[in-house]
Length: 551
Ligand code: ACM
Image (cartoon, rainbow, N blue to C red):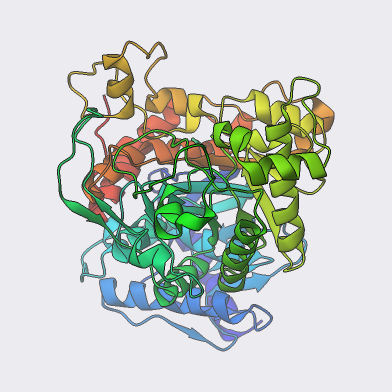
């Protein structure tokens, strides 16, 4: 027994007499948490990190020690093997899982990987005074954590959040702020929507006009009025260096960035940059980066090899830039009207002998061909594809992952057919939808837009509705293993400002964090709402996040 353990053993009965600290309010709730009498003070505590952990894990523990020292005024550090707070590598713990065991004299975290270490730290930080997030000295605060036994691991491996930076552009700093917050609530995938009719946002070296021309539009429609234009030139894009910065920032917080290049529709900004990639109809085409919302009928001419080369060049640069295993290739809402008259598309349909069959048009089968070709190209670069659920129409190649957005039926079908699936149905996961019942009180959303056209019959997407989502509902038992996880989506037609973006994400993103993380028996709406009121919302406030207040 070393000197510290001996001291701990002597002090144990004394510490155990300390009355129970208040129950911590952790979001997402750990799978199992037993709080007992006694507490451990983290002021000046020394950490010990198993040398078999990777550098990232060490860096995360070191950063926590530095944060603690800065706020409570007593130096904490990561030392050799005599720290009272130990991080132990334990390969029997499931990926991203962790355990925390706290006695009055010591604490031990066990994890098998970086995300497990990082999430244990997030849980511990949620037990500490809020000033742990701010870095400002707070010497008089209570820096104890309760004696406890926590065992925790995520229900789903894929816990995504999505941001459309095309309809409106968000700065690198704002993207980092969102990543920061999501990492606290144990999200691990950032789906970055980077190309659209209304703006191309990613630097591609071989095609400079994509950002010289495609990143800028001549005005934006005002509110829900399609006939208006504010006349203000609008746009922006991310350089490759900025993107690398985001990838590294996210990675240090356990988050993988998944870029989306939406093809072959939603490409009008690319067509404005390179009109030769468009279809040849009876009229000559003229393209502009779109200034209105909706789904443009102007799509890529996929019958031309030049277009295929363009797509492979773009995806090649994207695959080289993003280290994660997935590239999202969109595939949603591609009107195929132009393909019906374009000579190249029709010639390719003929060459490939594509037919209208089983309710699937030859043009839809042409889209299958594009999806399969991009999938094969990316497989050659070691990447897998994700596509919106439209890619299921016709024949989808093995190994594609389907993102179910038009309700849950696409996800149910895809999982039953053996495809991996990410659930992000509009009914629970579309955070651009209104949050409250009284439209008059809520700021303008896409729901208001629909309501003004009498196209809105659904309930609002309230916090409670989001919380109630069960991703495996109606998924046959044998197909449930294909549900990789859940994602909340943020489309930004009507969301131009960071404050409003945060208002629309939070606190609904915290409800999804419990949908993603907690086993069904561990979800409890009233406990969740109490945790929000007592801890998570004050935490968002501390972080300067402009969330929507509870009703
Ligand atoms: C989508 O919302 N168009 C995927």
